Length: 164
Image (cartoon, rainbow, N blue to C red; front, top):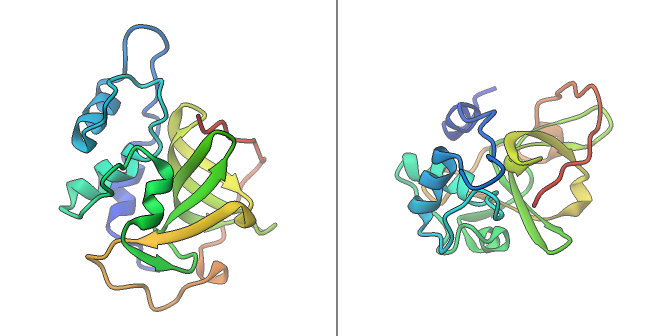
């Protein structure tokens, strides 16, 4: 299965995490500059700046206010769930975005996202929690979409993700 060209870039940042206290991760601070964030620390929500930095590196447009997760609902093309789509979901206090990279045997979606337990990493999500899925305008939509088109990934345990 061919994967979108942004997913290898997204995976290259796995393990980038917040630094607690007065110092902040320079990678995350760089992402905040890319999106023109009004804050400059890694302890504010940054799930939206991570995909923005990935897409920006490819020359794709990013949401006007990429650090607001729900702003991603107005970005790109609306699609059914598919490999590489940005999944936008609600959470207490706001929203969360993650790259959709697969599914589990139990029907959970696997997302590669920023600010998932204060780091870039994988997490599983109930597909019913998503408000929508988006795909860059600069790229043709995949021919095969839907949850069954996603690669089946083995996830050994479900750990609830902290998204803020």
